Image (tube, rainbow, N blue to C red):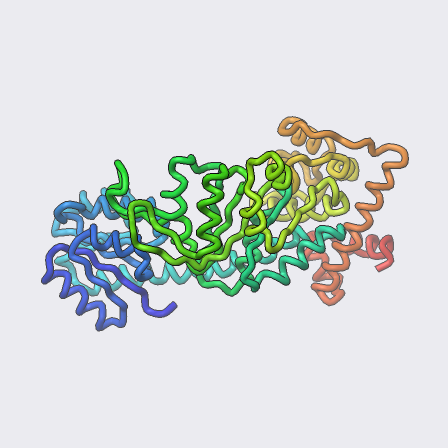
Length: 455
């Protein structure tokens, strides 16, 4: 990263200016504030991005403790904070660190010590940015959830890739656990937008607080409004706002959102100052919105404004051929996470997984596999353990896998194994030793499988 952007808060003007002069000579971008209130307003208004806040503790009206608390409970909680203390005030520094400050430095100390603390936090920020980049890449790779043998799932995957960079509103439908937020994040990661991805759950916001949460409010707008607060639209400026569980909104609040989506501006509660918005809207629901329209609980105009493009995610029971592919991915993930020597799942265990209808879909499968990896007593997950972890945590049903239905298991297993081993071989340029190392299987077993699968 380039030199960090610093916010300095101190009510002593001479101290403030000396800090500004010193840090600017080091190449930092510095913004000084004589009060915590002024600094907090700057953050809430989103006038500038800051990497690190340097703040005094003892200030009139709002002190440094209060400022730290407000920052850490806001959407700016990732900003690093250094507390500037007077000589001998170690207790106040400890209190500040407990509130969320990242470091402290005495004002009377050698300025080089302050520069050292700042540089240390800059390195931490850089490391976090690198990690975020890796997580973003991993987020894109989560589309293995949709790398499917099912034609409908592949269609959703291809549509998501096609529209990711297009500025259109998207409605994602599907049962709980089918991956609606994951595909939303994929669209965001490939959109080229510089703003944030902000997810809000419509069912979690009381109707009385809807406008304040969505559009923000100004100080004094209502009892308890002690400061300006940014809403979800402000937080998602230049990025993506995911309106999850959109079907839970009452028609009155649907109308308020519709107006903002159509006109691209809003007014924070208690303010007459118009705020422009340019965030991209993705809505998601597990409900049948057409049925809600017929019942009169969902507005037709709002529905058609949201679904310029609709992505419908099928439930896992309709893509049984993908169950073992997903299960193996989760087994490898959790084996690494928990440092387990789990090598796989028994054939009867695979039958149990494939025969279950998975009402919680991919999320439920993932949680089931995680529990199995945690509690397995050997290197192979048994059918008994699989069934125990399913039946103790769900009320779903098992399909009959005897007789003619047994072909479902054989077909699903064959498709998964052929796809899995083909990918392993292609990624290692058909080097069997590397394929064995990557998959965690021995060479003899891989040769056996290649012969069975005619690869």
